[in-house]
Amino acid sequence: MPLALFVVLLLLTACGGAHLPQSTLTPASDFSADLFGLFKTVFWWAVAVFIVVEALLLIALARFRARPGAAAPKPVHGHTVLEIGWTLAPALILVFIAVPTMRTIFATAGHAPEGALRVEVIGHQWWWEYRYPTLNISASNELHIPVQTPIQLEMTSADVIHSFWVPRLGGKRDLIQGRTNRIAWRVDSTGEYWGQCAEFCGASHANMRLRVVVQSDSVFQRWVDQQRTAPATPAKGSAAEAGQQVYRRSPCIACHTIAGLSQGKVGPDLSHLGSRATIAGALFPNTTEMLRRWIMNAPALKPGALMTPQNLSPQDLDAVVAYLQSLK
Ligand SMILES: [Cu+2]
Image 1 (cartoon, rainbow, N blue to C red):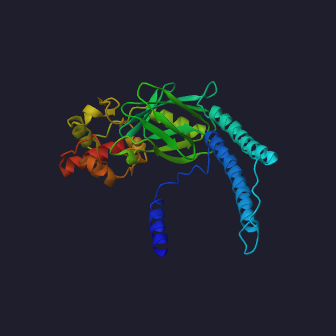
Image 2 (image 1 turned 90 degrees about the horizontal axis):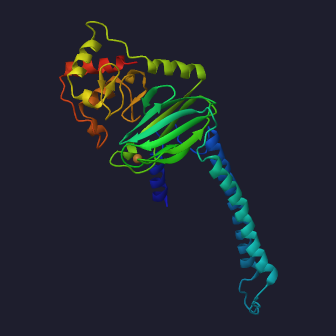
Image 3 (image 1 turned 90 degrees about the vertical axis):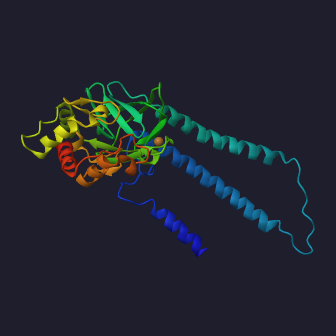
């Protein structure tokens, strides 16, 4: 027993960590509040059924147990009232569960009201691409949305099936190539919400995280303006300028976009990488150290990553990192 407890504790420590909790029990959007409401309804019905069934069982055990000298109990067959009772009661309980379930299914079907902000979500192995067709911008891994605003997510995949899930906001919903699945939600309060892919999609499925940044209207508008602006040209003679030269002649340009410089579509757009808090599918903090390690050997940090290890001199590596960090 102590050993079992120890193992359970050990396993539970794996649930901790630097990331914010991903719990469906603290809903923060209309979508997740609907789901949580349904969960509570079903839970309390289950509690009621448990109490009634266990009580009847205990009463039967106590009353009808074999006692020395007592006669065998009289078998009962075909008790009409009982039979109607235990047929009707479960049927009624199922109705009380089915009606709210159907209501929740329709409420979370993904149809946002007219005028909702549309975001196209495209799953890649193993990162998320977001396009805002009405705002004419795009982003990777970190989804920025305004608070208290209806959002329409239109989701598809560039390769295999993924599943978009932000436990505190809603989902999970599959991203399937050639299909568009929808989520509609409205987030209650500003803040950061973590999520991840919830459908096994290959070697780094577990490393396909995402971050949703919910902002006030004015902060969101500032972010949109920033995304629309091409990154500033590095100052003459700066490390960032040297890094830009390295980037220009590196294989990076085949896969990545940097506005005004390269138009690769294989990996995430790096035009505003310096303004993101995370890299590599929201997996690592966007720090100098992590950028260096990521550029040198991405597959070592994220198994299966398409980005090949780069053979850069220490000076070139520092310069490229300085350049990427300057891309705000
Ligand atoms: Cu996955």
